[in-house]
Length: 198
Ligand code: AMP
Image 1 (cartoon, helix red, strand yellow):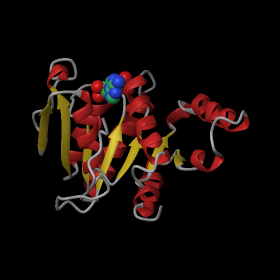
Image 2 (spheres, rainbow, N blue to C red):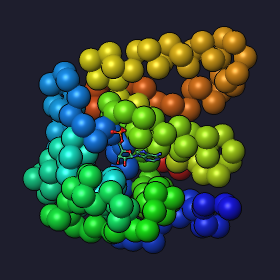
Image 3 (cartoon, protein in one colour):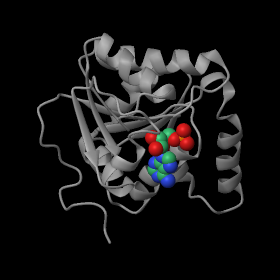
Image 4 (cartoon, rainbow, N blue to C red):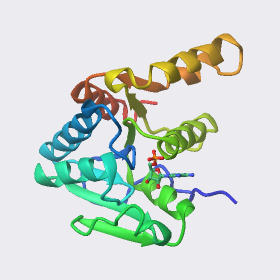
């Protein structure tokens, strides 16, 4: 089954810019992770952008959403019915879509967003980022995506990616598609600037 509709690179709503954030459903240990989530939401909201995310209230996910709303931004959440209790569906969002399954969630988030940013997180965060990346590699979209490396959390992953290139399993040009940064304000602007350029 192809999970993407034919118009996967187009948008149909009025918000000027939608940033999808993938991040942990837990807060993590280092307090800088939580701070990065709040900073991300504040920057998205203060610029009048829309946050697209998984719709939960837990962990870094909830922090990004709350900070976006507090800064005056709009938030579009998509959560599967089965995760409403576990991830505590956020009832204060601009739009919360409760959907049947994870595939629908990910497709709706993908369609709505102009760009994607991964903050620290677990395997769910990894899966979402890598799916977007592989969809790009397959020519299914041309939306930019990035990784915020907070407190060196992603250093081992970045080393692994470089090793994958060195060992011949990852095309260097595809490796370069992942926008990596440590300053969230700079990285958000970089991603926005890349929209439509690929
Ligand atoms: P985590 O990074 O593991 O804390 O998960 C963060 C987010 O990813 C949560 O919203 C999870 O529901 C979501 N997630 C977990 N598993 C998957 C998966 N297999 N595919 C896509 N998203 C997932």
